[in-house]
Amino acid sequence: MERIVDATTAARIRIDHGAPAPDPAEAAAVERELRELADGLRGTDTLVEVRAELPGDENGVLAPLRREVGAARAIAGPDLR
Image 1 (cartoon, helix red, strand yellow):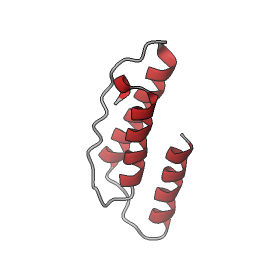
Image 2: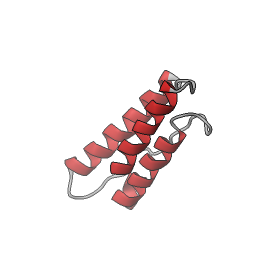
Image 3: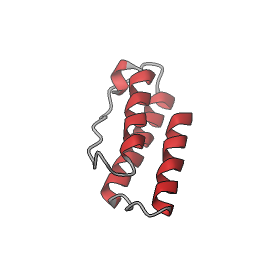
């Protein structure tokens, strides 16, 4: 989770220094993934599968964040990827 926070901070700094802001739909997709990850971890002792597809600009400011969210889901359990 610390890496997700770091990637979020880095994205904000890049935008503050002139990088283009992400598409609102891309930001919403990352938010949705984080909420699903949190709900999946809090809601049950048995992990359940939730969607982990995070499409977006591979060169955009959220690309590192999307990678960290995917990694967190992989670490959390095989059913949260």
